[in-house]
Every structure is written in structure tokens, then in C-alpha cells.
Image 1 (tube, rainbow, N blue to C red):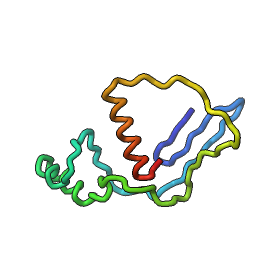
Image 2 (spheres, rainbow, N blue to C red):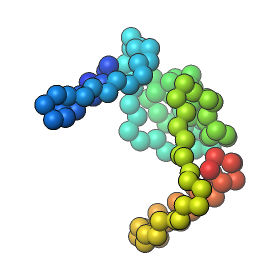
Image 3 (cartoon, rainbow, N blue to C red):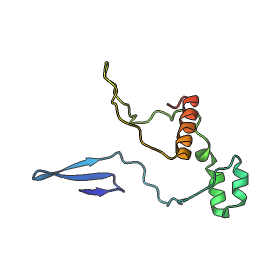
Length: 120
């Protein structure tokens, strides 16, 4: 299998030929993205800005809307995904995964938060 991430295509060998899947091409930007490996979550962006490198702090301030908490569903896009449901289909019965208690509590907290905001 061959994948070209920049041009978003994937070539998969099938029998004696290959099938190529082409993704939607977005505008290619002329600059690089800075990768942040870890940032502590704070309520105030100003508190966070004082303890970081000035270049990172400037980026966080400039793009504060990107780091803001999610308040609702994202806007409609060119390719909205849906899960088609079948009428009368029975639930799949499987045992739940086992999680450590702290992770389980965090998952339950995030699910309740998303339910409260109407995201799920």
C-alpha cells in the first residue's frame, strides 16, 4: 500500500491492479505548524502565557479561539459524516473494556460534560 499524505491519496494493490483513493485537497499553506507536545490546562490563558516561551505564548494568544472550550457542534462542512441507523436493529452485546478507576472517572466526567453541552 502506498500513501501520499501531502496530496491525500492512497494506492491499494487489488488483484493484478491497484485502486487509488483520493481525499479532498485543502489549500496547502506555505508555512509550518508548531507542535506542542504538552500543555497544562488552566482556566486563564494569561496564567499559562507567563510560564511559556514567548513565541508559544504569542501563538496561544493569537489563536485563543482555537484553544477555547467547545460549546456546541462544529459548523456544517463539505463532507458531514453520519451513522446510518437501521430500524429495529438489535444492540450488539459485548463486555465493556476494563479501565483503571481514575481513567473511568475521567471518561464518565467527559461524557456527562458532552451530554450537558448537547455534543452527543
